Image (tube, rainbow, N blue to C red):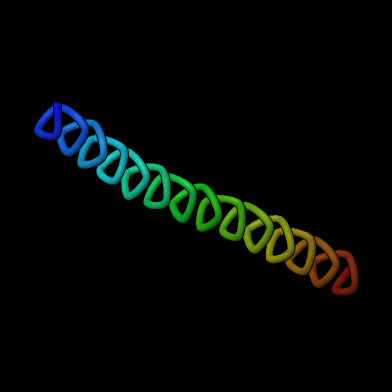
Length: 51
């Protein structure tokens, strides 16, 4: 029984580490999307100002 509990606990720890990695990757993707949107908007404004 103790071995089973430790296996489940280890599985949960691995799943939690995996979730944290995925969550941090999602945050990075979100930051990159926002950054790209801001850069595109700045470029559009600069090209409009040249006209």
